[in-house]
Amino acid sequence: MAKRVAVIGAGVSGLSSIKCCLDEDLEPICFERSSDIGGLWKFTETSKDGMTRVYKSLVTNVCKEMSCYSDFPFQEDYPNFMNQEKFWNYLQEFAEYFDLLKYIRFKTTVRSITKHPDFSETGQWDVVTETEGRQDRAVFDAVMVCTGHFLNPRLPLESFPGIHKFQGQILHSQEYKIPAGFQGKRILVIGLGNTGGDIAVELSRTAAQVLLSTRTGTWVINRSSDGGYPLNMMVIRRHHNFIAQVLPSCILKWIQERRLNKRFDHANYGLNITKGKKPKKIVNDELPTCILCGTVTIKTSVKEFTETSAVFEDGTVEENIDVVIFTTGYTYSFPFFEEPLKTLCTKKIFLYKLVFPSNLEKTTLAMIGFISLTGSILAGTELQARWATRVFKGLCKIPPSQKLMAEAMKKEQLIERGLMKDPNADKLDYISYLDDLASFIGVKPNVPLLFIKDPRLAWEVFFGPCTPYQYRLMGPGKWDGARNAILTQWDRTLKPLKTRTVPGSFTPASVSHYLKAWGAPILLASLLLIYKSPIFLKLVPEKLQDRISPY
Image (cartoon, rainbow, N blue to C red; front, side, top):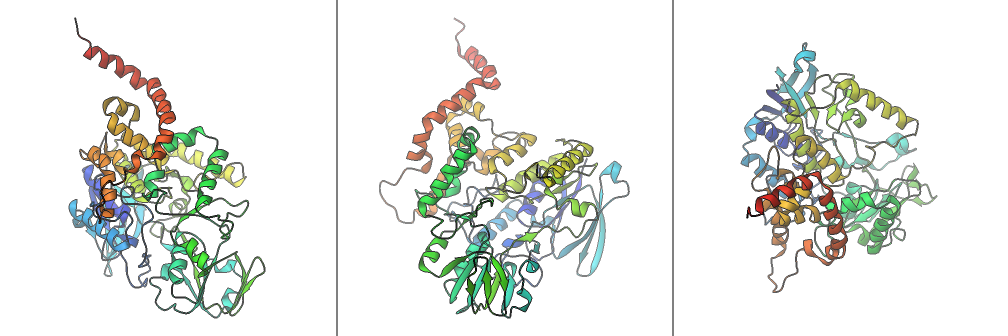
C-alpha cells in the first residue's frame, strides 16, 4: 500500500491532492518551484521565472458556487466572479484551514522522476529535486503530477510567413500582464480564446486600434444569464443533461445556436463559426460592445507579414502594426520523465480517464488537472485526486495495463485513419465526467434514492445547479455540511448582490419561470426513472411494510 506520496506543484490541483492524501492517511510531500502557493493564480509583474501567471485584470469564468472545493465553500460575501487576488485569497484560506502548508517544500524544482529498480514489484519512484543548487534524492510510493497544462507557450511562428522580418514587437500572452506600455499603438491579437478576448478588450481602452484575428470564429457567452444569475448555475444542471441525452444532437445544436444569437447575431459581428470548423465558446461580457464601438476589429486569419503590416486571408491589409500578441495556447511538458513515459503522458488517449498512464504495470502515478471541461476545472481535479489516492491505497481498482494499452492503441489507429473522432479533442461534459469518476469512488449522488429519502434535497440536486457539494453527500469522504451547502447555495450567490435592500426581492432562480416551464415533463420523466429503478422496487415495499400497522 502506498505511504509516501510526492505531489508536484502547489497550485489548485496540487493543494487538493495534498488534502486528499491526508484524508486517506497517506504522507504527502509537495514540491513547488516558486515561493508561494496558487500556481498561475499568484500574480507577478513579470514571467522571468518561466512560470505562467495570470494577467492582472483576469476575472474567473466560473462562478464561486460551481468552482469551489467540495467541502470548503467560498465565504458568502465573496463576489460570484472574482479577480485573481480574491481567488488566490480563497486558495490561501483553504490551505490554512486544512493545514496544508507544512507539507510543501517551496523553491524546490523536480529534476527527474524515474522508476525504482524494483518498480514492477513495489511501484515505487525515485524523485530527484533541487533546492537552491542542492540536489536530493528520495523514494516515494506514489506520485501525483499537478503541474498543469500552462507550462510551455505555443508560439507557432513558422505558420506565419514573413513574421521574422516584422519590425514590431512580438510576444506571447504569457508575457502580458497589464496594459501599460501599449497606449496609442496599433495591436494585432492572434487567437480568439478566452485570453485573446480578454486582452483585446482591455487593450482597446488605451490602444489606438485593436485587431483580433480568428481562424474559426467563436460563440461569445456572458457570465450572467437572462435573469441576471450566474450562467454556470443556470446551465450546468442534471436535468439539462437528461434532456441532452434524449434530444437528437441536431436539435440541441439548433436550440443552442438560436439562444446564443438571441443576444446578438454573431454573423453580423464577424464571429460566426467557419464552416467545417468545430464550434467553441468563450466567456466575455464586453467584446460585442467593443466591436460595436469600433475599438476592436475582427479579422480573418493572417496570411503573411511584412515589415510593418499584416496581410489577411481575405486579401485585406492592415498597415502600421506596432505589436503582435499571440494568444495561441500552451503545450504539455513533463521534462522530469524519461521516455517513453514523457511522450505517452502528452497523449490524452493514453491516460485512463485522463489520470492514469496506460503503460504502467503499477498504478502509482496520477496526472491531476490535465483536463478540459465544460465546467469548473477545480471541481474536476479534486475528484481526480480523491479517486487517485484511493487507487494508491488499493481501495479502487483499474483495468490491467495490457488491456488499457491495447484499447488506447486501437483508438489511436482509428483516429489516425479518420474512422473515429478523438474523444479528447473537445471539452468533456462536466457532469458526465465527474459522475464517471464519482461512480468509481462510490460518491455519485443517487438521485432516485434521494427523492425517496429527502425530496427537498433531491429537487435541488436534480433540477438545481450541479455544485461540487453533491459529491460529498454520500460514500467515502462524506461531508456532514454538504446538504446544507446545497440548500443555501443561492443565499451565498445573492448575498454579495444585496448591497441595497429592496422590499419584495425576486425569487431565486431555482424556482424561476424557466424551470416551471420544463418542470412538469421532466418531473414526470424522472418519476418514471425512479419507478423503474431497482433501488425503488426494493426500498418501497420495505418502507411500506414498516409503516403498515400489524392490526
